[in-house]
Image (cartoon, rainbow, N blue to C red):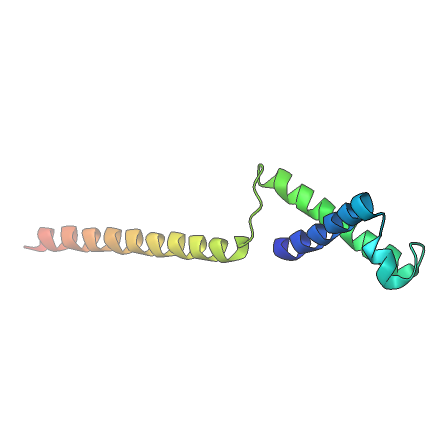
Length: 103
């Protein structure tokens, strides 16, 4: 989701760059004029994407995580795997102790 929001905001920034340098609004040029419903929808989507990125940066303490879901899955797998190993080790140690008493 962050990648999509980043691309949308990047497009919006290029639109502002073209307004500043060339006095040409790319979005209005594509849809006829600024007050067009389609132009307004694009401006709204760009604004929402910018707000999402701002919220993400604040939430992640200044970082934008582009592959957060994949890393979370790996971290949860690693934690689960290490928990199983520690449980297996404790079972093995318990079984070894039990066998030592039987001898």
